[in-house]
Amino acid sequence: MWPHPLPPASDATSLSQVDDGAYPQSRVTHGGATYWLERSADGVKRLVAETDDPSITDRFHGAVETVGDKVRLRAETSAHNAEALRAALPWLTPAPIGLHTSAGFGDRLGLATPGHVRALKAVRAPIRPVFAQQSIREMGRCHRTPRTVLDDATWGAFQAGWTGPVGGDADHLEELADIDRTAAAGFAFFTLDPKAEVDPEAEHADPDTVAAKVAALDWAALETDLPSFRRRYVGRRINLEHDALELDEGSVLRAMAKYGRALVHAMALYRRLQEKATGYEVEFAVDETDYPTKPVEHAVLAGELKRLGMDFVSFAPRYVGRFEKGVEYIGDLDELKRDFEIHAALARALGPYKLSLHSGSDKYSTYPLIAEATKGAVHLKTAGTSWAEALRVIARHDPDLMRAILALALDSFEANRKSYHLSCDPAKIPADPSDEIVARLLDVVDSRQVLHVGYGAILDEFGPQMYALWNDHEEEHHDIVAGHFVKHLEPFARHAH
Ligand SMILES: [Zn+2]
Image 1 (cartoon, rainbow, N blue to C red):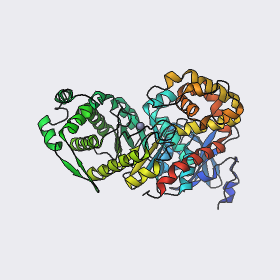
Image 2: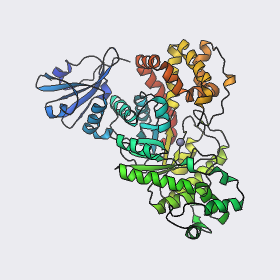
Image 3: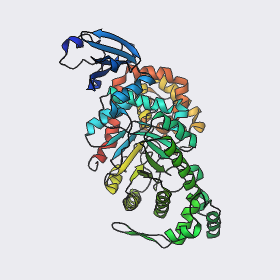
Image 4: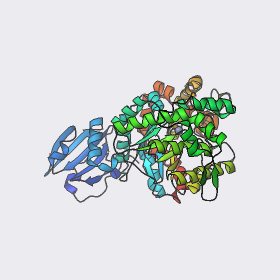
């Protein structure tokens, strides 16, 4: 519990100068200096660095004092100092992860990373973390920038003593400008999402309409023509380990009618990324579309992206069933298992690349299935579940505030729910819940989802009070988040590589 005692260290003289409030697990020596994070009684965090080389402390903005034969820096957790810290402790700089098993931990508040680190350390499996991960949509609702998302994750990983590699996911990028902003901030994993250009009408259109849609595509932009496209796919057979996928004419044309424009847009995003970034990897995501991605569609998408030159490390199809925010999988698990198996087999046959599981939080029944099907070539992506769990701290310590938060989430629900898949029924949530019900709001689907998507309005109204509570109960908050994520990560441990 806070404040932490300092761990024993060799340099007792200088340690005696350290104020109470250092996070012991943050202490790390690298490149000629020792760094740690401390927290003052009023909750303000500062970076401390101690070295006998003043050129190191010069890279940070802060106050420097002489302590014995060393200099000691105390510096704010500013954007400049986050960048300098990433340069000093290079593992904190997001880097590509490749085909390793990985997990993305979205953090709407910029507070949860130490809890995520705690979970990873507890699970002790080689799962590569992506602490910095937020979609442009969420950043807008939380008034965050790509840079603050990255910096908060840097400070959190440092605070908790993470010394492994990290990714950084600029999630669900849809516009060229999104690429510019996130590439400039230093993200390393770019999730390209062309959902706005996917044509859902193609799902049920009659063959003539499908043919017309295909003929109308911008084939020049696709750097091919319809006859060549047909030759590449129609009648082709893709051998999978236990099976084969036959690409019949009707399915191939329907796939292109549905995704042809999306391919053009995804390639525009990718080319922009090539101009703007170095040292990155890409995920191609169509998970937020209206219909499950069929195996033939997966094959055509992957084949065309590869032909056009996109090198993607993971693919996020829309799987069968419903992956709603913050709750268990809704659908037939046997059907989902077969869906995972065929997409995973395609990812091995056509890549290899990883399969990505979006809206992946709280879907405990699905993790063993996708871990097994992919043999660990999988990326688990969760976004808002850390936020939902953080609300438990509020419910425990200020039930009145939690009642006000719930009332606001209910009032603003129709606006908040836009662009999210939800099945909650707000009418089932008691209007004036007792303390006992408040304590269980995060355990009931209806209230969990209403609160899950209400973050923008809730933080706008109650942010300062909520942050004060999380600050006062930091250890408890991180323990809650860690416990929640251990349950997410453990099913992947056996297959992780
Ligand atoms: Zn997604």
